Length: 286
Image 1 (cartoon, rainbow, N blue to C red):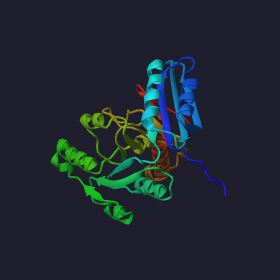
Image 2 (cartoon, rainbow, N blue to C red):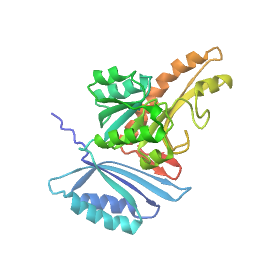
Image 3 (cartoon, rainbow, N blue to C red):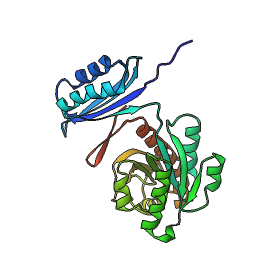
Image 4 (cartoon, one colour):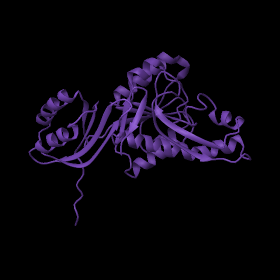
């Protein structure tokens, strides 16, 4: 029987580009008792920024506090921003929904098949329509009352997220605009699916906008939500070709498949620590 060696930790690093970074990182991991299983790096020459992701297993001599102390010395020398992620502890992801189910089902089924390394402890909605889906997958479901006003119902959402110790939020066609206060509190931890190929066709009814412009392709975009509607850093996009004979309803139906694929891929990249954010844009490492 072949024993599969799986990573115990993922290390992510961002710093100004300079000589010796890879050697310093790999040596520190090796000395600390780690064995690198995958290492990806990229230098964004336009901004002189180095990005690195290392997945590594550890032996019985590995001590996390000792490793972090040793690596901090390296980080200080190279002006690094870095994080060490425990692969055993799965992130807790809340899904926010409205009425449409296709993106929600995609995430839950992919998770059921073991393709998303996270937990889905709770589903929050502004309509009751998808309660049965949550029940089907044995996940607690909460409906918030948007008629209370944005600050009040977002306080209810925040309370639920805190009660369930949520790390990340996914907006699976959650048809509410989040306040700047909420998005700042959850900066780079809210992933939204927009049913349009951004930056074109922002805002409401992007398929209608696209049809009226006579587009030849339609798409979907997964991005981090921020205070600017549909303008957060982009994580994943895809498109499909459409014929001029297609109706708006056909655009909507065809677009659902793209939305499913893009949201799943964006969350998977995020959970695998492949997403690096610099300023207003993202870099995706393998």
